[in-house]
Image (cartoon, rainbow, N blue to C red; front, side):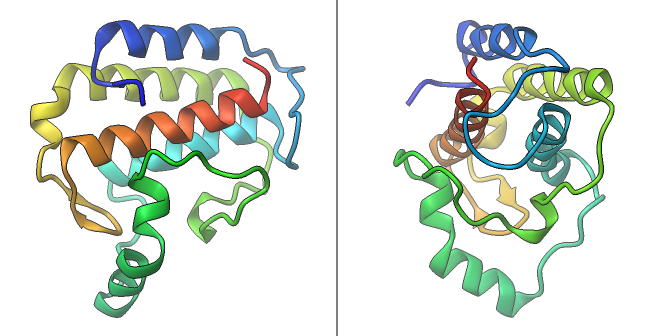
Length: 150
């Protein structure tokens, strides 16, 4: 798994994002390109904002038990997999705004670095290692950029 905390890797991901256009079409799935960018932003909103309510203790336990490994492992996501409700984007979004937001989040995360994320509390899974954070960030971005052919 590539390390999103390395500047070179972040720049590679951003270069892939820069290849997207408003007319980019998915190879699978139903999201438009602007919805996909907004969907990817949700991960970072959960880290950097209070926009999404945290799950209660029971739900957090269930997420840790049944979902965490799929998110933080190196195993790639399958096509057309289940999506958590807060990640479902139904309304059309502003492509340029979502693209800029995502690039800014990627840069912010890279600048903070792995050390900042070591043991950092996840919105849904409790404390994660920096490697688990890396896996969740990079794997999700790679999955959706591949979905759109970049």
